[in-house]
Image (tube, rainbow, N blue to C red; front, side, top):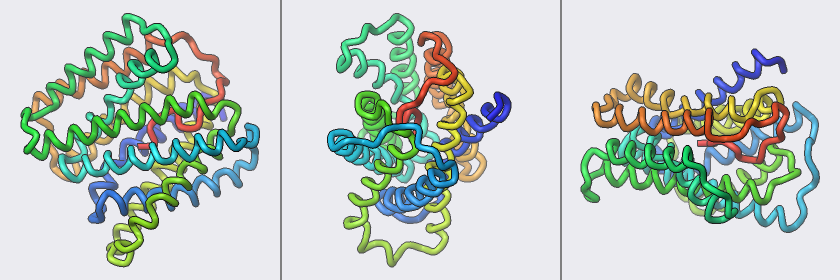
Length: 300
């Protein structure tokens, strides 16, 4: 893959990740069915992409790594469940911005769990994200749908942050696509018994949205991300992925008439700016061919 193709791939991947909330909103089914269906199609897509690209770039996981991958699958499924619940309760825009708080959680938890020194830029990012979330909150009333939806989205961001840190500690040396396949298989295995009674009532059109979520927003998006990281620096991809909430909010505005308020726009700009600045200036330079972890960016 050439540099220009890699840039196109990573932009396309960010767009697909940003559309996750849109497809979740289009589906009439509940969050449990959406998460289960997404995992099903993601397993099929990731298995197909692994066969097509036909090369394993990692070692076989041992018993400990398999157990940690399964735990990662539980976190991934919980992240999806809370995110789609936020989408149903408060809409795509608020859910996407609430989830975008995950880098702030990562900074705080990374320093706590890995005893790494937190830099001034990272503290500034946490402050900007916190201020942005305050502005995004329409009213501080737990009985309000918008507020409760934002809280579910923030919880989704926290769960994804824990997933990212778990992957950092447990997936070294593993092929990223195969690791993602194991985690999505765990999500499907956990959710299928719970979602099974509801599956006969799933509308036919919902299966299309679930397929789009699993194939494009998960399987293809993740594969594009992994492929582009073999050419681009990790810092470059992180900056591009700061656009993910922009794509989600723009499509929600267009498709569902979810017009953002001025407070929401200002809060969103602060959150996205914090992610952009942290990715652009906060981390040391990465090597272009650095091998990514299994879930380095949102499979949201």
